[in-house]
Amino acid sequence: MSFSHPSLILPTALSASILSSFFAGPWFFAFNHWLLAGLVRLFPLRDPRMNLAQFFMDNRLVSGFVFAVAVYYFWSLRDERTEWRRARILEAIAACVAAVIFTLALRPFVGALPPSQTPEFQGLFPAYLWTSGEGNSFPSHSTLVYFVMSAGLWPVSRRISAILCAWVLLAVSLPRVYIGGHYPTDVLASVAIAIAFLWAAWRVGASRWGMRMLDRVVLGGAWLELAIFFWLFELGEGFRSAGEIVVWFVRKVS
Image (cartoon, rainbow, N blue to C red; front, side, top):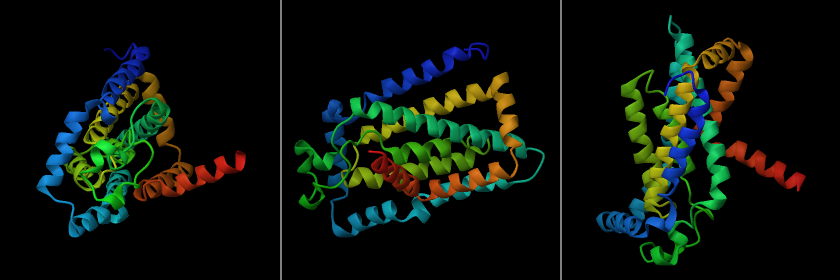
């Protein structure tokens, strides 16, 4: 695909995302059950392991702010490549926002109850977990957000990007799968969607229009620094504050 055909970029990325979404929920029942049963058999659900999984889910210093710190480090570096690095980070942010909006629109039509709330899977988990989790497990938004930002650093530092991507799967995705909050395929779908939207963002950013737009934004000055500060803060704490504001606003409007 050439840069002269930007109209093909988004449909291609969305097609890849839609295809990846078919890995979500109970559609691949046997595969999901086999993986979850194997995980629980290998690491039985006992209090020390459950507490460790909960620690990674709740402790934002190890499962959230580590990604914000990495992004801030590359954003704050001052040398002849500062503007180039910042453009790559802005591409990752744009991909993250677009991917989340896409999955929120897709979510009502795709996915299922999390394993801990699905009768066929509940036998794998202790009874007190049967009421935990959200109503729809697709996709793993934590995996999606942090994987986009981690993989988005690939052009900047492949080593750091690879380490962060591995940390997403280990410290963010695995604990949520382990306690029955997500199917393994929710994580796989999130990774596929992240890659699709990052690819689209990179292609758009490499186009003439994209380069002009990025140049303008990168030179945004104080307002851009403030926006990045708030973005990294929300990234670090898993966008909990932003989510609470949205919920409050929706309640007020309704």
